[in-house]
Length: 238
Image (cartoon, rainbow, N blue to C red; front, side, top):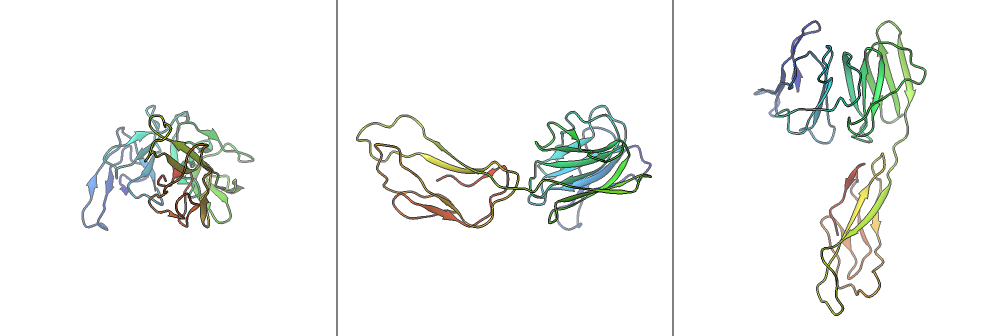
């Protein structure tokens, strides 16, 4: 992803390549404005964010999930101010930070709502941000007020289990099945092996259990897997 136009341009074009620069395709934002920064999702290259550093009542933060073919306004309740920089929290991809003409703003829901992230930070134009995920520190570079940093919350996983089925079970029924889905509703990715142990509902007898990516003891588990489960995602159901 690249944007042209220069520091003092009023508008920019966004260009995208998927073959290491051999060819570029123009995929502009749906509004006019200078693109000051682009951030690409660290796990999915087709997802990216762009911010506009000119006054624009129709949005300052835009998201694509298809390599720029279409862009969605995720400015939410951000003030109508030039926005200079955007960073994605790699521990929780729905958490974003932007720097604009009055400071730093954060969203934890992918841009639906934004809050000012300003504990100790003066009212100042923020032109650059850097997020050290290992130390969980967010640094801000300002225009005229130096550099600032703040500790951000450590990311932690929170795994949940949900069960679902279609229709009703009847006494004596053979081949009945239901799905078990393990999800991470926390702010950080899982680490190490995940083991799912199922307690059968009363009246049911297990005949088998399986799911893509899972290793299960038959007929009723437990089931384990070792791959990471990112925040706000789910494993394939059992």
